[in-house]
Amino acid sequence: MPKADKIIIRGGCLIDVDRHAAPPTDILVIGDSIAEIGPPGMPAPSDAKLLDATNRLLHPGLINAHTHGMGNLSKGSADRWTLELLWVGAPGFMANQSLEYKYLNTYLGAVEMLLKGCTAAYDLTFGYPTASVDEISAIGKAYMDVGMRAVVAPMLADFSFYQAIPGLLEALPERLQREVAAYQEAPHESTLKMMRESLHGWSHDRERVRLGVAPIIPLHCSDALIAGSAHLARDYGVVLHSHVAESKVQAVSAFKRYGKTLTAHVDGLGLLGPDFTVAHGVWLDDDDMRRLADHGASVAHNPGSNMRLGSGIADARRMLELGVNLGIGTDSANCSDNQNMYEAMHCASMVSNVRGPDYTRWLGAEEVLNAATIGSARALGFDKIGRIAPGYKADIVFLDLHKVNWIPVNDPTNQLVLTEDGTSVDAVMVGGRMVVQGGRLIGCDMGKLAREAEAARARLAELNGPAKALGAQLEGIVGSFCTGLSNAPYHIHRYGHAH
Ligand SMILES: [Zn+2]
View 1 (cartoon, rainbow, N blue to C red):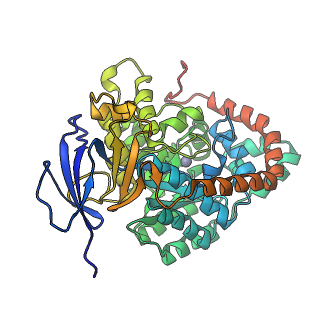
View 2: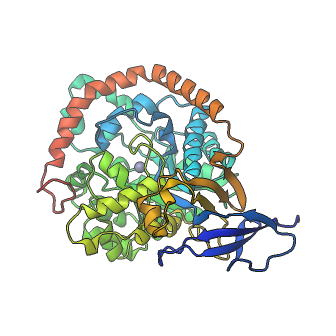
View 3: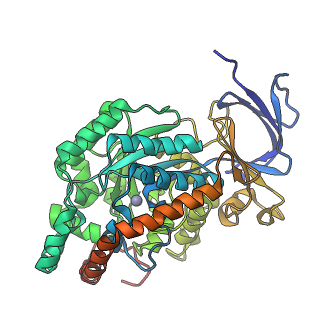
């Protein structure tokens, strides 16, 4: 076996999140992990390579608890839309993606995340629309190629959006009912078979890129698909993720269909566990949160997306209070519209403040930063990332303290959450290997990436023209139907406006 590379990082200041400090600290990296942390000048093996981190603030790589690599080619493609209108519009930009486009979409997002200090992501990827075993492997390869960690969780569904919302299909004119029948999903048997084959044949290094299983939204899944997903994930020891109570439309629809909340419904199907993450959870009530906490489950809090889609303001304080593990995510680039974890943290902090005037219930910067690192790591199921500590993977972000965000340095924890926007990222190390240096991604030709992405965008716009036109016909009807559902009474309130 070749001898592991040794790197001694000297001259940097290491964030101490809970103490709101960043004392000068040296870090010894051996192979892909942190071996030792100590005061400046601590002894290091003579064959360790020196890495000068003078004027650098070091923080653990941020971990994106919820994104969709499939959305990067469609960033900024719509302005005012709700989650349900995003569903209406989705075929207009999501359909007709070849294996190459699925790879490119994912690669593009991974590039952005790394450049903005994020070293691992939970990617709910193609599955909807269907993906093949080869395509899912290519999506995993995008993360391998770019050099970041990921959980790649294909989204599984056996009901279309139009079947998922009770009464919606019937509200459409017959002509449109016939048109949307084309969006019928594959039966759960074939979907689960594809997922099992992917899990069985996964060839990427699981320390870097793993699979997860994501029954997309409970309303879009039969009971058999949800229970089957849980069994499959536990057979293979991988994590589970689902969008639960993201919008009020979903929360209200759950009572129409199941007579209970979505969380209670999936609890009954065996989905909850320490390996399970709820995406968004805006409309979770106390009982839902207690169920999640009792099972050791996580919530991926996506405050930017929740505002962007008008889904509401999740009660992250209550989740923490009741013992739910909290991670932070960006969500997809078509509903947030970037992959910037600094911005996601900033949003998480700000949006907790507008929930009410009792400032003692607002999220502290240290709580937000811990959620975006340690909390997200737990959701991803990677147990040795999210901290800079001996035994943990050497996933380290180096911020340039001579960038204006850090002039002067008053409080490193506050400034990471409230001031930093990604423009200070100078270098990023993943598993002891530098992947970003001088603010550039090593081995990535941005000009070539831009040309490929532009060509793909133009081609997809052409191919998806008819789907987009159909979406335009559906928008008004679906929009008013769903706004009606959103105005129905519900036992908790998460919108910004008064009851
Ligand atoms: Zn999502």
